[in-house]
Length: 152
Length: 152
Image (cartoon, rainbow over all chains, first blue to last red; front, side, top):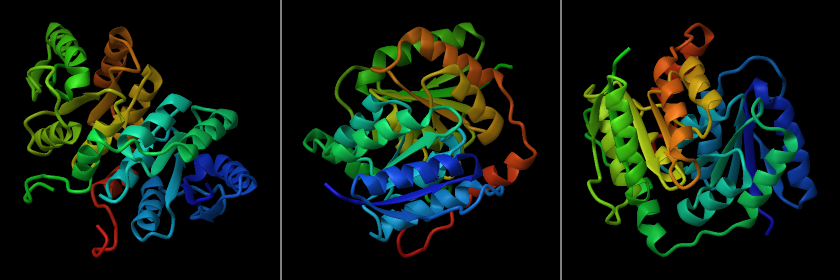
């Protein structure tokens, strides 16, 4: 099923972002490229927040977040309660995050995995549905974080 | 350096939690086991939130979060702006998350990696320092998520 996929990165993952955006369009998806638009140094949280905001606003149904390791941008995206971002490096996790967690974003590390692995993860992510059932209650809890107001 | 390490899981990772808690104590760390205390079915967000709260309150300096894939609990922990949780399955990422992201929590998947791999990741995580420098500004941004107030 064709989706609107938002994609964002930092400078370290700029080339992987371009390659994945091309591949996504070839697969029939609409792509919203949230930047950056060069390899000049940027801060991954800025682009993670842009991506989460695009998901929260409904401008995109899915997202792909990239940085050197995938770690930093995955933390940033998950700051927003509307985003459920799974850091993945292989297809099994890219499938499980859809089935069990209804993940709407995957993060990947452009310095840790290659473009073929990244495409395979994206394909698994975009072709797998949410299993619902017992997982639904847990996913709902991710939308309503329960912390002490003072500390959050 | 000995640290106070909070550890939490869901039912799927209960056995790995017990094994890692024993190993952490053998390594000289103080362990705060936030549960669960049996393999009865629980919801991973509840335990992820407990762990993030322990970090936010300063009761623990580091945390280890476990579920079946590591994905769900990593999302939950990262809901709290005081937590920086990296989902890892190998030592390089467990080291990089400290050096580049000053991660204070790692998440791992008990159904995806074995106990030796988990111990190796925990060892790398607990023995690596933050590199500071250019990474500091980015990490600071993770503590102050910038979203539209309406959508978050």
